[in-house]
Length: 126
Image 1: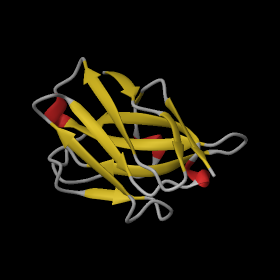
Image 2: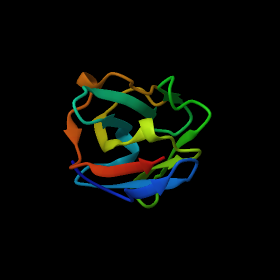
Image 3: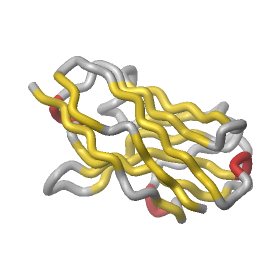
Image 4: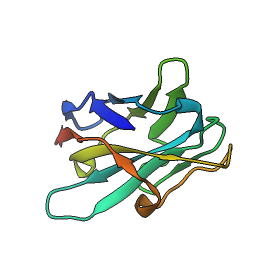
């Protein structure tokens, strides 16, 4: 499975961005997906995850209520809508994928993912 993330950029405090991750090389409807981020000098952290059927989602505590993950099984893409961005959201954002037997389970642990995109940088200025 290949993953290509896009949509990063520079935005002001309180602004919004929409990240997309296009996938190829696998049957998209059998894949669970997630977003993670890594700020400079810090470990990579969980942001959001979505099950293969799109019904189950989970979020990191710091983004709950501001970020929304969704998927389009017709376009083989997963999207992260980020609203009310804060300077502490500045990071490189990575999309990740894994084949899932469960139809409705979302995975928050990064070691559960087998495939990773190249990352897209998000910078939030104060």
